[in-house]
Each structure stands twice: as C-alpha cells, then as structure tokens.
Length: 617
Image (cartoon, rainbow, N blue to C red; front, side):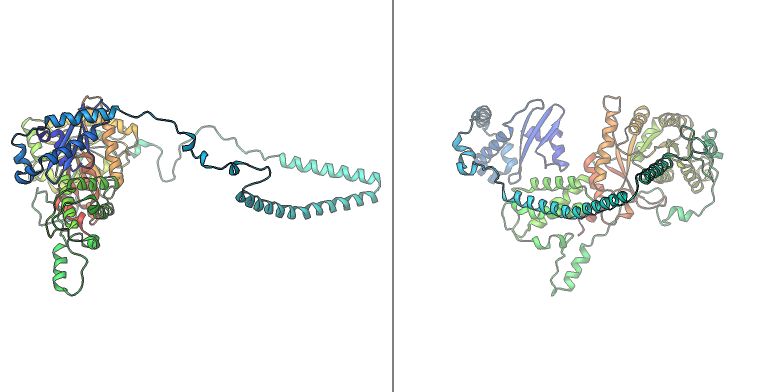
C-alpha cells in the first residue's frame, strides 16, 4: 500500500488537486482510494479495468474502519510514518474483510412479488372504484361548463348572422317574384358573364419581360473586383530576400510601449493585493465594525466562527465551500471545474484536526489557495530559450505552431514572441500558413517590416533577424509549413513560428487539416492561443482541440497541446478564472500571457499573482 502511494500512478491525481473523484484509471489498471486526513493515511485498492467489482467501495470502507480502530493508539503516539516504517500484522484481517465483501456481493435475496395486501389497489374501497354512467369528476365538469359557455357565446354571436343572411335571401326572393321570367333569366346571364370575366382576369398573370437564367452568378460589387488574382497582394517569389520586407518608418515608442524595460527579459505578471490596505483601514477605524478582513473578507464575513481543536466535518465546510464555488464562478472559472475544486478541497480537509483559534473559513481559504497555486504550477516547465539553444547545438530550427479559435490574437502574439526571441539574439522565420483569412499574409508582412525597423540588420552584423515565408492564399497549410522548415534549415534560422488559420472546435474538416499539419511537420512546441475573457467555453475549446488532434492523428501516440498562450489579460481586471480552467483541463502550463497591444506586452505567468487576483473579494 505504501509503495503504491509513492508511485506516479496515484500521486498524479492527489498532487493535481483532483481528489474530488475517488477513482483513477492508468492504462489497464483502475485505482480507488480513500483519504484519512486525521492520521494522514491513504487507502488504495487496485484492480483490472475490465473487471466490474461491485464490492470495492464496501471493501475500502471496511478496511479503513478496521485499520483505524486497530492501530488508533499507535497512530496517536508514533504517528502514521512511525507505525508504517515498522511492522504490523493486518494481512489476516484484510483477507477476512475481502471474503466478507465478496460474499456480500454474491448473496442477494431474490426479488419477491408483492402480495395483494401490499399493493395500492388493496387500500381502495369498492365504492370508490364503481363508476356511474353520466357521472364525471368535478374538475372535468367545470372545464366542460367553461367550454359550454364559450360555445354558447359563439352560437349567440352566430345566430344573428344567420338571421341576417336569411333576411337577405327572403328580400332577394321577393324581388325575383316581382320580376318577370324573361327579366330574371336576363339578369342571371349577366351575373354569370360578370363572374366569368372576373375569374379570367384573376387567372391571367403578367408575362415576365425576360426569363431568368438558371444557376447562381457571383455578385460583383460596385467598388470591388471580380478577379481574385488582383486582390492577392502576396508575392511568393520574394521569400527569404531582404527586399521582401523593406524598412518601414514609424514611431518606435508606440510599438515598444515601456521605455525602461530590460531588453530580452520576460517579466512576471504583477498584482497588488488589497490585504495590507484593508488591514490598515481596520486599524484606523477600530470603532466601526468591519466585515472585510483578509482577501475574502466580504465573502465569508457572515460565516466565521471559532472551531476549537476538533475534526472538520463536511457539514462545517459546506456553507463555506458553497460560497467559494460561487466566488470562483463569478471570477470566470468554469462551473464544472469550480465544483471539482471545492470537492477536492473538501476531501482534503475532511477529518483534519483544526487549531484552537482557527476558523473554518481561514482553513478552507488557505487550502483552496494552495490547491490553486499547485494547479497553476506546471508539471513540466516549458523553457523556450533553453530549448532553442538545444536545437541550435543540433543545427536545426526550433519549430513552434500556434493554433486556436478565431479572433483570439494568434498573429499579434506571434509577433510579440518574435520580438522577444529577436531581443534574445535568435533569428526568426515566420511561416504564413493562414491561407484562408483575407489579410492574414499582409498582417504578418506588416509585423515583419516593423520588427526589421526595430532591429535592423546593421545592429546584428548585417543579418536579417526576421523574415516572412508565404505562398499566398488557398494553398495547403501543411505543405507551406514543411517548405518553411526546410528553408529555415538551409538558411540557418534559429526559430520557425507557424501561424495557422483560426478554426472553431466543432469544424471537423479544419480540425483534420490542423492535425495533419502537426503530424506531418512534428513541431517542437504546440501552443494553444486562448483569450482570458472566456469562461465555460475554455473547457469546451481545449477538450475538443485535444480530442480532434488525437482522433485525426495517424500516429500511435498522437501529439496534443503542449502549452497555452493566454491573451487579452489586460481586459479582465481580477476575473482571471480562465487561467485556472485551461490549466486544470489540460494539465499544461501557461507559457506566455498577452497584456496589451505593443510588442513589449508579453509576460510569464506568476501563479501567486493570479491566485491573489482570484481570491480577491
């Protein structure tokens, strides 16, 4: 049992704060576990995934209870580690509990049919089951009366109309009696011809002046041009030449933003917590009752109560966890992930002994903060500069592919990352693989000109630090990426940044094309670009992108998303929940954070700053 806990099979869900579910599947093995927070124990049962064992939950509960009761005194004296490092005899007890659990699952009483006395029919009297003809329930009778009243009203309205029609007929008959037979016959003929002529006029339809030709014709705008070649401003013959991107004159201060920055440095996100300011307010106004104390003061002010030296129960934590769940959802954390986080915190704290002057609120808040920091800290740190230098030693370019939905800022943040790489002394080739969106190639060309203006070849020994590789529109993106990588290898570029077209996660043909591009070119880093404005949509996007890459890949171990670029972070104030949602779903790190519109507005994620913003009341 101790050895199983030390393996990555079980430590993964526990350290990633996924303790809300008590089961974990690894390859062909399923593990079910139960936490004992009072004595810091983990009870694990492992079995083959294909087996359907109905007694596992009962077995792990019985083992937990028996083990605690048997070694309670030793736990209190030596602690869990002191006992488990020694020897203890529990094998016979475990085998007995296993046999009892297996027998309880086998022995099931056969289902017995109910007797007549146990049925509901036996409780009814004979009188209530007799129906008399013509007798109807009261409700139905009322409804019938209402319907009848409506019918009476309609009949009352309809009667005078009939009477008026009959009066007309009588008057017409009186007139006909006064006329002679010849006159009546002549009058009927005129009436007949008049009706016939009216019907003929109605049936006639004006003939169209000119018959419409079948089939659709493309619309030609007044100020436009029907020739697509005229609108294609890309020039595939200029790839790799310095003349393709002439130096553009513009204000460098507007493009750079911060003048006091250190070139090539990627700063961390900064966030100032309001804890100190709130504490100062409380000290200055001691007479006024203050509800806000600490980061979550306003949210949990009504729930604070001292719990002295007792074990935490689920009933104690439920009100606080409910408030925390609502708070996380309000900060843009996906609802499903907020529920799972609170469930994980509850499992982690249930049974834990609190201090004398410790409140439930402060304990739960601290546990949630630790869980959020643990989620945001990556399992594998992505160090792009180190990986680029490693690729340099192998004399090959380092390839990064950007993917994401429409309008999240892929091209803009690609240009920011290009600027950061150039300032660190690496040459960049931008591959324009967005051959679908109008203006995509021109946008990258403009960025390339401005980057060359900020870092001219004269400042780097005559070497052009950034170039654009493009083949126009309507081409195969995977083929263009392959040609760009080959061109970068021949020309000695350090990094290739592949820009792809934006696509929705439900568009199967475009997702297949993206999976093909990644499978064919095997980039070193696949970055998903997502905006910080989304809430539940972030979960759907990442899950479906990963699923599409796995389904449409021909490799045995498909290539999935390696990291996340979080954009538009400057627009959300303290609603930073999208960072939690994305990292929780993929277990991948946030590599870059976009915080503005200049080339210097690129940051690395600071987990403590994000958690401080998230926990702000």
